Every structure is written in C-alpha cells, then in structure tokens.
Length: 345
Image (cartoon, rainbow, N blue to C red; front, side, top):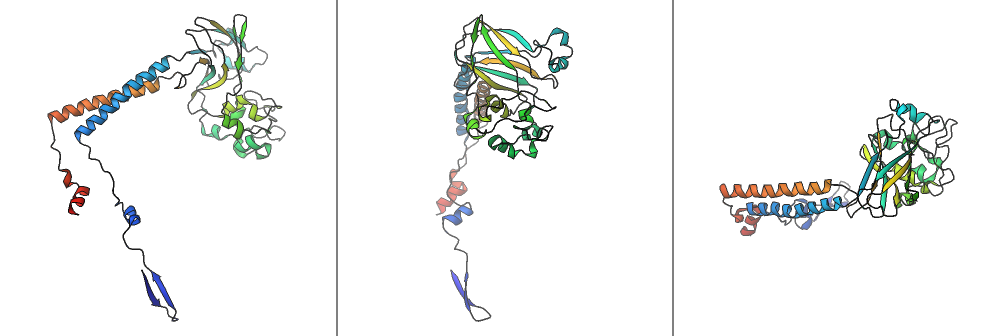
C-alpha cells in the first residue's frame, strides 16, 4: 500500500510500505511453513537401531570377504638393497654415484593372481601433506609453460643461471625415481606404464606443448629426471607423483602387469635403488595387488560396518530392556504444539 505526501516544494510524492505480513514468503522467513516433526517413540527408536544393525553387519562381512579375495604381495627393500658394508651409513651409499644401485630380490606368489595386477611403490614417513611442500608448485606453469613460473615454487624456482625451471617446485623436484623390472625364470614380465595417471590430469592440468627445461641441472639435485623431448602431459610418472598424498604412508601406481601370476611362482625383481629415503628415515616397499569392486585390499571398511552394526544391535537390545523395566507412558500427541494449532483451527 502507498501513501501520498507533499514535500516542502509542494511536489506530491508517494511512500511505499512493506508488504502485508501474509503469504508463503513471510511464512518461510518466519519458519512458519508446515513441516514434518517426528516424535521418536521408544518403539521407533529401538526399531531404527535394529534395522541399522541388521543391514550393516552382513554388509560388513561381505566387504571383508571381498577384501580377503584380493591378492596382495608387499616386499620392503630399502634395507635389503643396501650392501652390508654400508648398512651403518646408508646415506653415503645412496649419495655415492660410483656404487651400483642395482638390487635383485625374489617374491613368491602365495595365491593365484588374475590380471590386471597393479604395481605400486609404497613410501612411509614421507609427509607430502606438509603445507610448504604442497604449495611449492605452479599449476599455471604446468599447463601453459615457463612464463608462469611463480614465487610459490621457491626454493626450486630458477636454476643457477637464472633461467626458469620447468616443472618448478619441491613436489616435482622430489620425483620418485626407483625402477622395477620383473622376470619369471628367463621370461620377462612386461609392465604397462601407460594410462597410470588420471585422464583429467593428463588432458587438463599438464600442457601438451610444455616441455621440461633446466630440470635437475643445477647444484640442487633432488629425485628423478625428466625427458626434455616429451611434453608434461605424457610424463605420467610425474603426473602420478604430483597428486600429493594426504597421509605419511602412501602408495602410488607404477604400472600394470597384464598377465596372470600362478600360485607358488617365484618372481625376480630387479630394483634400481636410486631414491634417497634414508635422510628422513623413510621406508620403501614394492606392492603387487589385484583389485575388486571395492578397490584394493582394505579391511577397514568391513570392520567399520561390523562395529557400527554390532553397536546398533546392542543399543536396540539395551533400550528394549530399559523400556520393558522402566516404561514411560506416552504423552498425548494432540497436546503437541503443531497438533494443538490444527485442533484449534
């Protein structure tokens, strides 16, 4: 509604009043719309906990069974691949380029493993989630090239001659560079190292026309090197490594074996032990694993469902006993505020 008024100059003006306090909008702002407000009776509460338990416990057992069918072999090698003469000073061994870093270990296949078999390297006590480490990169440079070298890449930003490093930053600088070759007797087991990274990363985060330059050429040397003739979008080891892990113990995909491994087979692994995990007390392992619809071997999900379901069943039984021994009469639902309004109307 508007009201007419006259200003000092005699000009008629109209003043607007707020809309009337009615309608859906007003009831919405005043939280006055109809709503379902359940009254949790003892029977409803007991039944809810019981249903949760009945659903969760069998599903947890099914998850555990699925996880147990995943074949997995783990072999730690950071100690075994150090010569006995250097066991007391592993850092001098890993930093001495004149010493061969080749190492051969054997793994026995405990169960039949169906292809595809995923090869991972596992690092422990490596904090990729450190704030400064995570920020030490330039996503624009990875996508568009050296002109987007940013201050966030410090301290691995420029080489000794003042030229930009591509890719810059501590993450790329610390690239994992151990290698693995597998043989069974005299037969080589091929490892497919294509498409091990996320497709979205290859197509949208790493440039097809961006090539490594001035990388690991200065006095400040870190992990692996990159082929300067291959664009970043095809350097899949780098792409996998640049997706930082949230926990200090993590696995990253190295490749895929596309043939079955039979039970009791002995696999020989030729390892090039290049990566310096000894400075920070890290551990290195190689993992061979199959996969299920839940992913790799992981018992946590099954245990979580079983524990939650068991607690729900226990709570339902406890509430039922309390309700039987100390029953409380249920109040009149007509006395609830929303029902009282309806009755009055």
